[in-house]
Image (cartoon, rainbow, N blue to C red; front, side):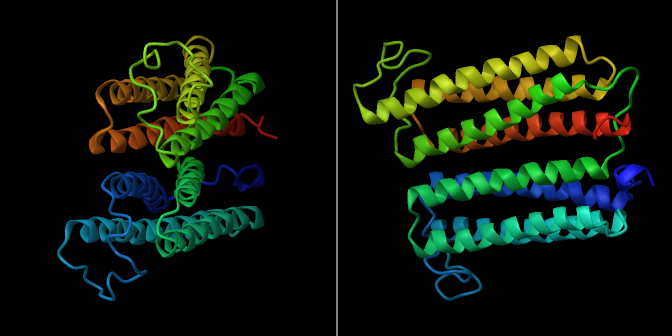
Length: 309
């Protein structure tokens, strides 16, 4: 086993379970968006049962809400299995056990918060926190999945510290952008600005309306985040040729970013139907997942080169 047990050879089972945990968590976030967009959050007014039954009544809101809970059960099983296999792969290293325990505590907090959200009848900012915690959990699972993956092949120098910081900055910026987007939804400001890139025909009409200000802040922050991600992508393609996997990861970041820009522009130009709301959350989560994945590759490459510290 290499230094700190960081590059222990992961079993195929660990790799498969870790990837599955990431996939199911992403699907769970999308299902949560479907619940929110369809107004099915109170389709089951009690928790964990639905109208006191194990099988929900045959009405659409109840089926949608209960499907979200069922997906949560599946995802939770994979997440817990991932934590156990992660610790076992590293011979129950205290550091890895602590990391797995952190993931487990976050999962438990999400379950409790989901129950509280139902009990309090979906207060907007509790829903926002619920989404924020779900994205953190997804990000942590992606890093664990990186542990389960072979170290990226190096054909030259590993990514330097400057690029690492650039990637971490992009990761933090995207997470904050997801929260500002959730804040727009919580304040029902999605349609405060009509049109794109202008806001109701104006460039920056701040101060006219509170909801318009919320929408504008989200937009302008999105422009800054998009610019930062484009710098990350360009640098990965042009300067980080020593780690071929980074160039592939940068391609995924760019694809997710362009798709999300298209979805967002379409929403404010043609209205905010349920499908568009779900796609916007799915796109935001995809941008988040891809930049986290890129950062995890940077971390693994530096680790395998003995530069992680």
